[in-house]
Every structure is written in structure tokens, then in C-alpha cells.
Length: 107
Image 1 (cartoon, rainbow, N blue to C red):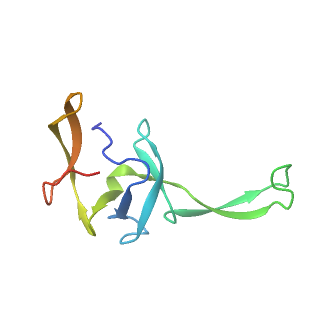
Image 2 (image 1 turned 90 degrees about the vertical axis):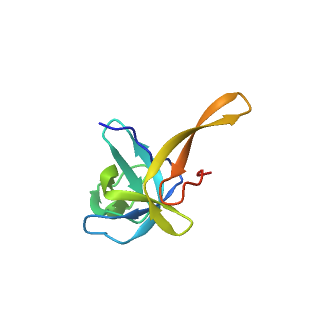
């Protein structure tokens, strides 16, 4: 498997699946399972029993994970692939993410 090029907090666009075309912010990334949870994407219905944390119980709608291959980073309003480049920084060379569409450094 390749390295995960999406980070928590990135704005991404769904490029495949039932939510194709939607955009959202990455809530969490799981590199081991090659998946991410995106705000408002891949919503599932869970049935919860009453508990101390949720005294009412009932039906809960929440985000489920989506495969990394089905999302693409949005940079300056456009979906782009992500690459890496080494640049001179404070502590010698630093590895930074680069937008393949424009060649600009991300962040």
C-alpha cells in the first residue's frame, strides 16, 4: 500500500461512491486500514441502547469511514493529486506536500 497523503483537517472531495461530488473536512485518518472519516460523508444509521452517556437511546446518524482512494484533496477550490518534495527549511531539508495540479506547496 502507498503512503496516506490525506491529513486530519484537510478539505476533500468524494470522487467515487454514493456521495460522489460532495465535499467535507477530514475528521480522522486510519492509515492502517487505508480509510478516513469525513464530515457529513458516508452517513450511516446506528441503533443505540439507552446508556449512561445516551439515556434516551434510539436511532443515531453518524459518519462512517471511507476508503482513501475514493477521496481527493481540494486545494484552492480544485481537486488535485498530492506529491512530495524536499525544500530547504529551518532544520535542513524538509519533506512537504505539493499540489500536482499547480506545483504549489500545500500549507
